[in-house]
Image (cartoon, rainbow, N blue to C red; front, side, top):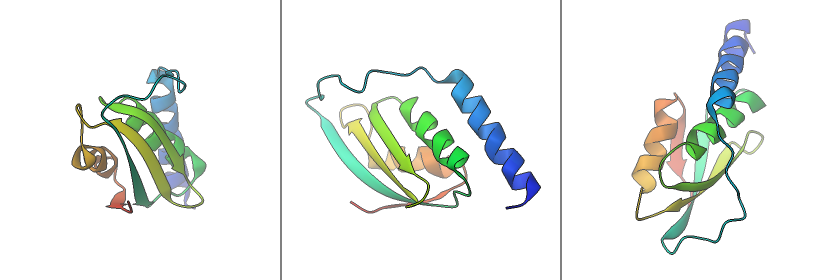
Length: 103
């Protein structure tokens, strides 16, 4: 990994972690809750996964998000009354990653 890429990943991680408010993951599921599994290409470290996870959790309508650096995937539970698959894909794409819906 190049030094510039490592610095960029750490910067993203620090910026997102400093503004994330953790929510309770044990809340009752929303009536409109749906799950999407994404392939996320371009992550170069665990910091990338943490930054994507944090950004998704800040997204309106996202109930929970789990991003796995090793598998290059993300699983998002969202309220379909507030957002949709395209909106979730757009959030990750705008961060510079290539995203595809797996299921």
